[in-house]
Amino acid sequence: MDLPEIFMCCPAVYAVSDRYIITVPVTEPCVMWVRVGDRNYYDHSNGILRSASLTHMMEVPSAALDSSRSYTVCWRKIIERKPYFSDLCDVSEWSSSFRPCGTRDAGKINIYHIADAHNRVSGPIAAGSRFGDELDLLILNGDIPNHSGDIKNFSAIHKIAGTVSGGSIPVIFSRGNHDMRGIYAEELERHTPTDRGRSYFTVKLGRIWAVVLDCAEDKPDGNPEYGHTICCAEFREEETGFLRGLEASCETEYAAPGVEYRLVIAHNPFCEPRNAPFDIEMDRYAEWASILKKTVKPDLMICGHTHRCYVTMPGDPLDKLGQPCPVIAASALSKEDREYYRGGAITLEGRTASVSFTDSRGDSSEAVTVDLGNN
Ligand SMILES: [Fe+2]
Image (cartoon, helix red, strand yellow):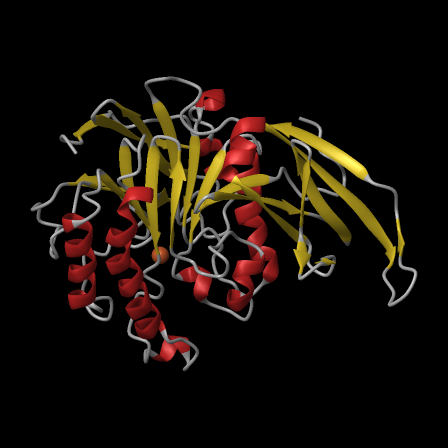
C-alpha cells in the first residue's frame, strides 16, 4: 500500500473501551482528522487542532468504524502557525479499509501477540506476519520500546503496529515496565492509546471482551533503579478499585450479549512471582487473580515480560497465586541475532485456543490446544 510521505509508517487502529483510536505518526507538523462515514473526528485539544506533536490520535466510536469499514485520514501541513492568520496547506487525504475483529470468518479468530521487542522492529514485523491477510487482531503487550528515555523509541511501537496490522484491523496495546523508564514515559499517553490517560481499561471487539491490566514496574518503588520517580504501589491500588468495580457493569462488559471470549491482557504474568527484588505485591496480585476468577471468569490470560514462550495452567508449578485461567506467555529474543524474534500465534475457535510460538525465520513450535472450558 502506498503511504503519503508525511506518514512515518502505516496508521494503526487501536481499540480502547468502546472506541478506536486511529494513530498516525508523521514526519512534519500538520493538523489532522479522520472522516468516518459523513463525520469528522479531529485530533484536538479542547477545540484546538494539534500540531505540536508528531503523533496524531483521533478517537472514533467503535460502532461508527465497525459499520463504515473504512476511514479517511485528512491533514493540512503547517506552513506557519501564528496567533492570527496561520498559514496551512490544502487538505490531503489517504483512505484505508477496516475489518472489525471476528468478521473475516464466522468461526476462527486469529490473534498475533508481540511483547518485549525492546526497540527491535524487523524481527517482530516478520514474526507478526504469520497469519498474513488472515490476521484479525494484533496485541502489542508491553516493552516494545527499550525505554522511554528517547522519544524516538516510540517509533518501534508505531512501526510494528502499523506494518503488521496494515491499519486495517484492530490493535490492542498494553504498557510494559520498560515503557515507564525515562523522561518521555509521562508522555506515553500522547503517543499510545489509553482510556483517556488511564493505561488499564476494558475493550470489546465483537465476540472478544478483554481487560488490559498494567502491573507497572516490577520491583519495589524504592528500588534505586527508579531514583524516586515512581509511585506504582499507589497506581496498582487504584487499579484494584477498577477491577473490583467491573462486576457492577458486567452486563455491558464481560457478560454483554455476543461476548464469547474473555481475555486478560497484561505484560507481566502476575501470578508467577519471581525471586527478589521481583517478588512484589503478592497479596495484591493474588487479589487481582481472585477477583478475575470470581467475576470475569476469563478464558485466557496473555502475557510477555518473561522473554519465554509457554502455556501454563492453573495449579501448574508456575502458578503461585491462583491464576484465574490458562496463561500464555509469548515473546523471545536472541542475544546473538538482533533481527530474531519469536511471538505467539493464537487461534480462537469454538471452546479452544490453538497456540503456536512462531518466529521471524518462519519456524513454528507444534501447536498446543488449550481447552477453554464451558464459560
Ligand atoms: Fe517487562
